[in-house]
Amino acid sequence: SGVCLASNGHHVTCVDTNNSIVKKLNLAIPTIYEKGLDKLLKLVIKSGKFVVSSDLEKSLLNSSIAIIAVGTPSQNGKINLNDVLKASKQIGKFIKFNNQFISIIVKSTVIPGTTDNIILKEIEKHSGKKLGQFGLGMNPEFLREGNAINDFMFPDRIVLGYEDKKTLSYLKKLYAYTNVDKIKVNTRTAELIKYSNNILLATQISTINEIANLAFKVKKINIKEVIKGIHLDKRWNPIINKKRANPDILKYLIPGCGFGGSCFSKDLQAIKSQGKKYGLPMKIMNAILEVNYNQPLQTVKILESEVGKLSDNSILLLGLSFKPDTDDVRNSPSLKITDALLKKGAKIYAHDPIAIKNFKSFFGKKSKKISFVKNWKDVVKKVKIIIIISPWNEYFSLSKMKISNKVIFDVRCAFSKEKFRNVNYLTI
Image 1 (cartoon, one colour):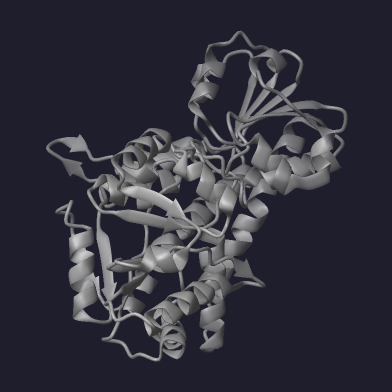
Image 2 (cartoon, helix red, strand yellow; image 1 turned 30 degrees about the vertical axis):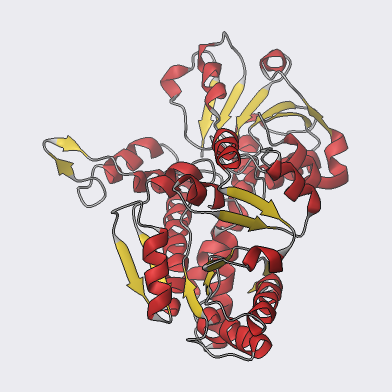
């Protein structure tokens, strides 16, 4: 977000407490993988519009806006606001001794009522000032990992949550580079828009997975034809100028091994907990989470039904990140699938273009039981089973390789059965 704002003409200082991150970013070395980030980072560093610092107080001097974009992890199903409150406290202390007007904008995902209640009280407590002497807003992000820069530069909408008019004017200037629809609402509404968006997408994923699981049990059902029939409903896929629109929403109506990443599970847990606090059972949230929790294990069940015992079988896992074009493995289905296969006694080889390091970190000591490979094509001949978990582009060359007498399990329905001959092709 900081790099993209700088590329649109703003002067941006990113603050982090990790000196290693600060040093690398100032040298134009990205500390996360995001398509196109390396080139854009170099450009904004060179232009002088983007710098990174570990000194928050110095960075706040002459700033109009302070954006809080720290993590809000899930802790026992509830949102952990420790880092948000720490940032709010530090900004509040700065405001206490400075008369400049600063709008504090929350970009971190927080449950409705957090910004205008908890964060506002924290800033007022440590600044000794009231809202109006500083600004307050909420500007949720809708960036997909692997496509974040494009999403930022060409958004489908921007939510401008505000508690004072000056903050709204600042937010308008911040996003003046685009004429996209801008929704101007109070901060609580902005907070719920973010959660609702993710919850509805997660609902579609878990629902279609449950339907696919039923098809597997009933037998003799072509789930891909079922999906095609759904996708051709004009309410999902309207016909415009005699052509199908094929909107991105259809990607969330394809069976798979469940959703991963840092957002969906965390957001569902947070809203579920908030609902419980207000006496609401949140039955749908519980159902979505339950289906998704078990979905990676459906891979193992289907595999066992096809090949029998998995002990001593050699298996190649392709794609360890929770989706292609990212190195993020948080809540990735690959973690559960790998763990289940190891417990069954399978011999596992694994490949991912960039996520192996993060996978090892999350999987821990059990990683020693896995053979991580640099060239997955060299391993294809050695194994009996190939499971495609995250369909990176390079894996699509698999259909062009001469392969026979193997099981290929496409858990994301990314390929088509017709592409493979002389193999047992499986999907969810």
